[in-house]
Image (tube, rainbow, N blue to C red; front, side, top):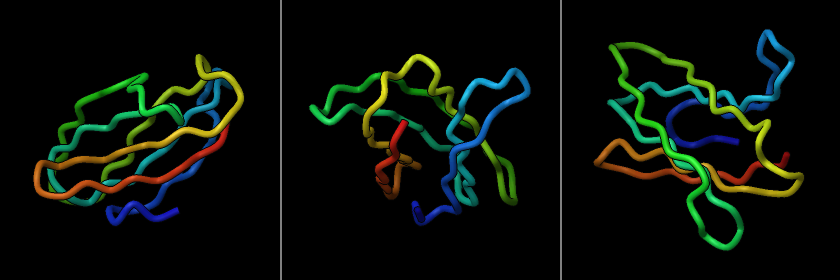
Length: 84
């Protein structure tokens, strides 16, 4: 999936817990995870430096289902759906 920033993928961290990895090439951004009802379940602020950044969003606390991830840098928002 393309968020307009970079890529979006699901991978495992060193402990084996699933995480959502997001590549951001723009400015400082807010990453938010929503359920299908529109309730925000998680939000984290990420500070970027010049160049491509990869951030992880833990998903081990989410029950199986589909969710939305929003990346907002204050000038544009991109949303993508992902499944746990």
